[in-house]
Image (tube, rainbow, N blue to C red; front, side, top):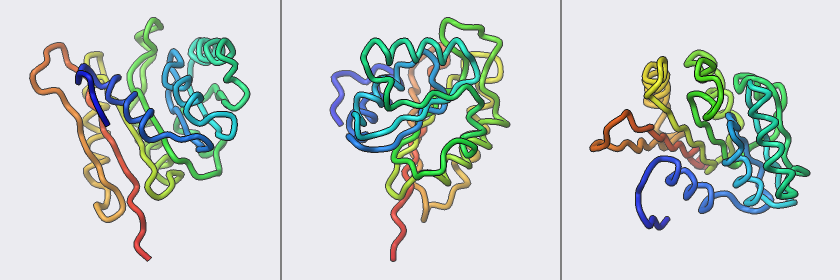
Length: 193
């Protein structure tokens, strides 16, 4: 990866997507929000790949669908209006890449947030769907009510993962004010045969 500037976790996540996700892969955006990551993923996997996108808010699904349609990328994206804790009800195939942006919908109702209970259920299911050498990113926004509690729960969950099965890295700005987001990167290790 090459960074012009390490500005924020959004830029770091974007670099991960652009450097990891390849044409033909099957990927998942567990929190589509305004559709920016979903759009980038669709461009990366191309017409031979597939993107699943989840959100609990109809507004988020509609915004994302509009962005995808404008770019003519909606044909290989499956948008699902449901909580990410239910991914196993819709996805059976293995995934190459998974991304979460926890918190609330930017520009939406800030009272509707991701919650640690459903996020932990989702993460456990997502790790089960992730391929060997697959990558999972979780950005935790901690500046809103409940955000720090969710980040701590996610971090505790990830710290308990078996190091023989997963490599977990934490990206955290330590000299920035205003509660900057924390990014976790999880690689499912290749099983030695």
